[in-house]
Length: 105
Image (cartoon, rainbow, N blue to C red; front, side):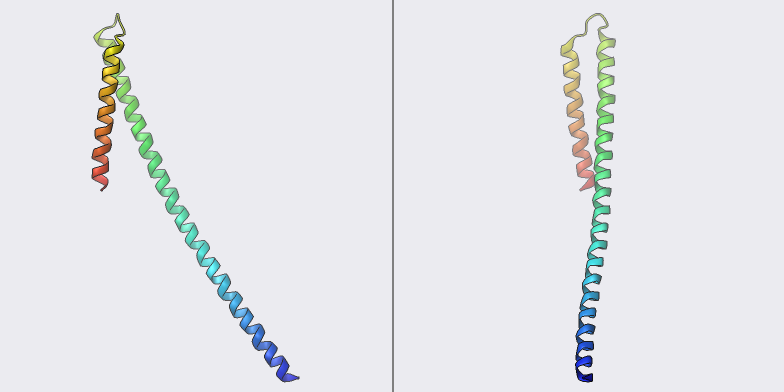
C-alpha cells in the first residue's frame, strides 16, 4: 500500500513541477508582450508627434503664404499666386521630409 502512495506522490510532484514550468513560461510571455506593447506605444507617440509637427509647419507656411498674397495685392485675391505659393510650400515640405529621413538613417 505504501508503494502505491509513493508512486502517487511522484506523479503528483511531476504534475506540480510541470504546472509550475507552464505558469512560469506564461508569465514570461506576458512580460515580453508588455514590453513590446510599451515599445509600440512609444513608437506611435513619436510618429504622431512628428505628424503634428509637420502639420504645424504646414499651417504656418500656409498662413504666411496667404498673408503674403494678400499683402501683395489687397484688392484682388489672385488665386493663381496663392496656388503657386501653396505649391512652393508643398515642395518645401517634401524637402524637409527628405532631410529628416536622411538624418534619421
